[in-house]
Every structure is written in structure tokens, then in C-alpha cells.
Length: 321
Ligand code: HEM
Ligand SMILES: *[C@@H]1O[C@H](CO)[C@@H](O)[C@H](O)[C@H]1NC(C)=O
Ligand SMILES: *[C@@H]1O[C@H](CO)[C@@H](O)[C@H](O)[C@H]1NC(C)=O
Image 1 (cartoon, rainbow, N blue to C red):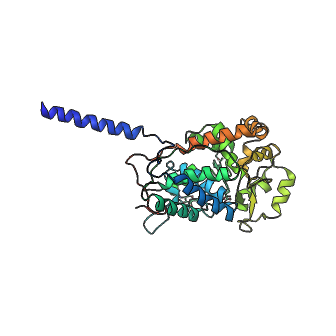
Image 2: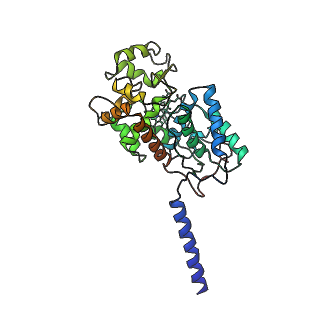
Image 3: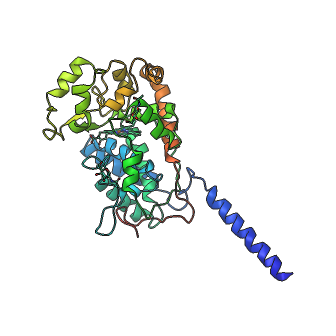
């Protein structure tokens, strides 16, 4: 009798625990008691980094995307390679391209000082992405928190999940769909290209080989991005040619005038594509874009987080504890 009641009790507790971990939800108040100054601490470091380098907010925003698309938003992107560990930094979409890890270190340092061993690197990326958007004049949203940091990374996952700029529309749609994001959410999210820069190597084929590009843009970009692979590969051009440090909807207007910089950008508006009408809508309705972008960022931030007792709270974002 006693033993069966104990057994019942034990399995009841196990059932509760597994429900708790399976349904663990992120929440905007996760650190309210454990780290009350978290938001101001993160924001001040992001603000100082962007004031020193206007592009940095764009780079930080992109880190969140590249983290979330590989095994969920778990800080896996931040792990450095070592002799016995292969991270994601050398994966094709990241190599010679992602930047801002030193800023993430500075944020983590400031956060550890304010509240040691409490806040995950994955959550720091989520807050940083929102702060960057706000600094550029974009929408504000409440960031859901409670993610934990991975003890693993996946280079092949990064290769396979993050779409390259050479992708066509159907590949882009299916790579976002694989992460639970709709076509509408994809178009809103790629509006992040309203800020930041791309390297010649990312848009060379588009400016020389594609038909779906404004002639004057192609000519202008060719002057600083030679045809020959290997020459000028790292020369930069703005993804949004008018306002690359303002989070506005000009990116979509550019797509309508065939002035997307990347092949993948222009795939969103081809003249006969399924996403053309949404691009047009965002091009004349900045508040709809802002609202949809904020909602889609929250949805992207929900991609398979580690919660509860999963993973860890990394002390240093670059290495597992
Ligand atoms: C539709 C799929 C996407 C593709 C194919 C794509 C591809 C790219 C490429 C090729 C670059 C330039 C990289 C370089 O040359 O170094 C870039 C930059 C950037 N991407 Fe995307 N991207 C996509 C979606 C997104 C999303 C969803 C976000 C964020 C929500 C994002 C944020 C950014 C930002 C902010 C930059 C500029 C970074 C900087 O200046 O450092 N991208 N993207
Ligand atoms: C990732 O992609 C690069 C370039 O295509 C390739 O060299 C590398 O082997 C790939 N790695 C994995 C693990 O898929
Ligand atoms: C899109 O690209 C994929 C992969 O390269 C290819 O298999 C597919 O046929 C392409 N689809 C269209 C509609 O061009």
C-alpha cells in the first residue's frame, strides 16, 4: 500500500516535471526578479556600440537570425571553434560575414556584473536584436525570455538551414517553413535588410547575371564589385540603398523598383511572384511592416528554445561551461 502510493507519487511528480519542460514557455517577465536591470544594462552597451559603428546594430540583428535558424535560439552561433569543438562560425553563411561577437562579449560582461549566472547568451541575442531595431528607429516589442544556452553547435545545420543569397523564392519559402515561419512572416523578416551591408561576393552574380535588376543599380554596383571572383570580394554595399542605418520600409520600395541588392531580395518581388503583393503593401504601409516585423521577430524567437533544466547558462558566450 505504502509502496504503491509512493510509486504513484513519484510518477505523478515525474509527469508534472515532464509537462513543465515540454510546455515551458518563454515570458517577458522571466528575469524581473532575478535581474531587474537587465534591459537597461543591455541597451546601454548596444547604444554605445552603434554610436561607435553605425553598422553594428545590423550585424547584431543578423546574429539572432543566424542563431535561431540552427537548432533554435540557443546561443549556438556564439561558440568559438577549439581543437576539440567545431562551432558554426565557419559555416558558409557565417564565414567572413557575421560580426559583432566582441559586442556580445561586452554585453554579457556587463550583465554578469549586474546579475551573475542568471541570464543566457541566447536571451542576450534576443534583447540585443530588439534594441538594435529600436535604435535605428524601428518598432519596439516586448522580448520573450527564458531561453537557455546550448552545449552543442551544428556547422552542417548552419550550412543547411540558413538560406544563401542565391536561393529562389520556393527555396526561401521552404527554409522558413521548415522553421515554422509562414511566407508572410518571411517577407516581413527579410525587411531587416532595411539596415546593414553585404559583400560583393554575396551580390556579384545578381548584378552581372540577373535580368530582374534595375540597370542603373547594376551599373553603379559593378563599379565597386569586379566580375572576377576573388577581386573585391569583401567590398561592401548597402542592402537598402537609401537609408542603410534607418529601420524604415524603403527596402520594399526598392524591391518594387527592381533595386534589391541580393538575388534573394529581388526574389520577393519578381513581377509575377506570390509575394509581390505583400512587398507592395509593405512599400506603402510602414506601420503594417513595423507591426508584422515585430510579431515575426517574436515568432522567430520562439523557435525550439532550450528551457527549464535543459542546456545551461553560459558564463562566457564563446564557450560551454
Ligand atoms: C530571406 C532569407 C535571407 C537571406 C538569403 C539573407 C542573406 C543575407 C546576406 C547574403 C547578407 C550579406 C552577408 C555578407 O555579404 O556578408 C545578409 C545581411 C544581413 N541580413 Fe540577411 N538574409 C536573409 C534573411 C534575413 C533575416 C530574416 C534577417 C533578420 C531578421 C536578416 C538580417 C540581415 C542583416 C541585418 C544583414 C546586414 C548585416 C551587417 O551589415 O552586418 N536577414 N543577409
Ligand atoms: C558546409 O559548407 C561548406 C561550403 O559549401 C563545405 O565546405 C563544408 O564541408 C560544409 N560542411 C558541412 C559539415 O556540411
Ligand atoms: C529553386 O531552386 C531549387 C534548388 O536549387 C531547385 O531545385 C528548384 O527547381 C528551383 N525552383 C524554381 C521554381 O526555379
